[in-house]
Each structure stands twice: as C-alpha cells, then as structure tokens.
Length: 304
Image 1 (tube, rainbow, N blue to C red):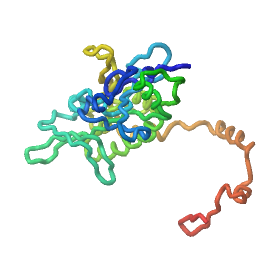
Image 2: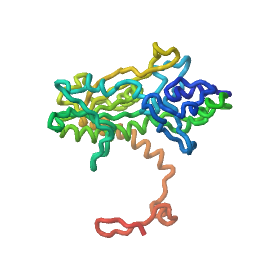
Image 3: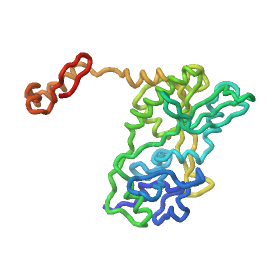
Image 4: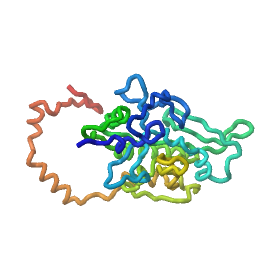
C-alpha cells in the first residue's frame, strides 16, 4: 500500500517535512545551531542526514504532543534550555556569574554535553550543574522516507523502522545512575534534558522515587522534559515546550531498575520444563563443538 513519507518524517532542518523539500538549497544549515547539520547516515557519505523528528505510528490523526519525537538532540536548541535549567534546577541562590562549558570530559567519568558553572571573581568554580541532552535512536531505517520526501513522491510501502526505547532505558539510564553517583559526591546535580515520551517510558519501566523539589539535597538527578507542540507564531510548524521537571537520586533510580519484584519460582520452573523438551546432554554439546572446552589455569579460564 502506498505510504506518504510526510506521515513518517516529522521535520527536516527544523521545518515540517513536505514532499519536495530540498535541504541542499540552504546548504543543510541547521537553524538551531546556525551551521551545517552534523547528523550523518552511512547511506549519505557526502552530505548530512538532516531529519530532526519522526512521527510515531498512531491510530487516527497524529498529535504532535504524543506522536512527534526528537531523533536529533540539536532540536532542543530551538529553546534556551540552559537558561531554563538555571531557572528550574539551580540549587540555592541563582548564580552570579553563570558560564557554560561545552563537552566536559574526564577519565573515569566520561563526558557531559554542558556544565553550567558559577565562576567567582578569582576564576574558581563555586557551584555547577551538568546537563546532558538525549533524543532517541531509531531501529531499522526511516531513510527511504527521507529519500521520498526529497523526491516529492510516495513510498510503495511503509519502511520498517522503530524507536529504540530499550537502548535509552538500558544504556542512557545506566549512565545517569553512574554520573548521578559522582555528582552526589561532588554535592552537585546532573540534569537530563529528554523528550517527554522517553521520560514516560522510563517511569513506566522503573518505579523510582520522584520529587518536584529538585533543589533538595537528596536529589542528584533531574529530568527536564520537552515535547513538541504547534507553534502559534509559525502555522504548521512546531516548537519544544517544557513539560516536566522532576528529580530523584542515583540510588533510588538504581534500586528501581535492579531490584524489581522477582517472578514466582513456580512460573520459572514451568518455563524450564517447557524448554526441557529441547534438552541435550552437555557432553554431547562439547563433542559436537557447540560448546568449547576450557582448561583450568588457576584463576583464569583459557579457551583451547
């Protein structure tokens, strides 16, 4: 069945995707960072892949609040999110001399996108907040839809793609826990700027303690979420809007993920019995080479 690519690609270079759009006409300049789009695809070796947002597949008329989602973190740059971090997340009195350090890296820690630091007259850093941006990755590929938008044509069929929710949950949240732990020791906080849909997914999977009092000393991880809504100043276009500001601790988030209620033992043994119909002898597996033998050398196991 033919598929309109405008129902898949949400925005190209910050503008609503319409068939026939030509991002090369502006030399692929991203309006949010005022320079050439940095997003890349292996299928485009010589030019950017300037897709900002995708539509989630939904029944009926899509609602941008729920169905339009960031796939490029630069889309957050449409709003002054760093000023909003100071306004909503800064602990205590507002900083007297806030300065922003981009891409702060340190061995054993990794990196964060930004650090907002209150710099004193002598150049020393008094208080600081780290800020990380996170969009969502794609599974499969929406690239054929982008090609169709540029060609001004419908697709013969809808491409197979999805949103990689599990990657955000497993990878990004794990990193937040680790970095939240470090910020706890530094008596500071890390702010995760993420799409509202991603935050809703995280909270549906992990029942961690959440607090609106993000300035509390008990909070070292703050979620600041945005969604896209109709832009009243630009009919047909969209703009990010702040939705949620909630905090938690690294320990609460970790416990909610690691220590879920265990399934009943009987349910697991039932699964074992179902799998036993495929049971084979371990020695037979070794003999056929499906499981390699190992030779014991004290504390190390060396494959032969």
